[in-house]
Amino acid sequence: MKNLLGKIKDRFFSKWLVCSIISDKKSVQYGIRFSYPIYISIVFIAILLENPLILLIAALIAFLGIKLPLHPFDYIYNFGVTKLIGLHKIPGRGSELQVNSVVAILFNLLVGVFIITEVSINFSALAIIYALSSLFFVCFFLLKE
Image (cartoon, one colour):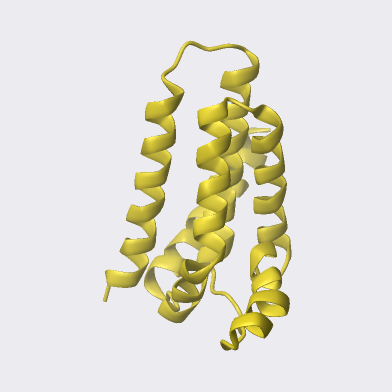
């Protein structure tokens, strides 16, 4: 079990390192258009409402973000919004999608457990921290050289 956790940790950190060193800024910019704001809003609302079902759905969306070449909301953007507004489609995503999705899954499941087990925590503050930290990481990828 310890060996398995070590492999998972090493794989996650190697993806994070690649994401930090060789980030495709365009990839993050595409996410900022549509996917990240919607996803952050869903999680923010779920935490404020203390709704574990919405958090579970958000974790499922994040899981699909790991397995699919694009974020699930990118597909909605490509096949819906671009047709309505006439913008360019999102061509692909960088490794930041997998890193962000892993963090999102862990966060959503942890908060869901807090809600289900009725841990006494200020969920409003937690929602604000989540939104601000998400904004920080988006800015981190956009501003790094």
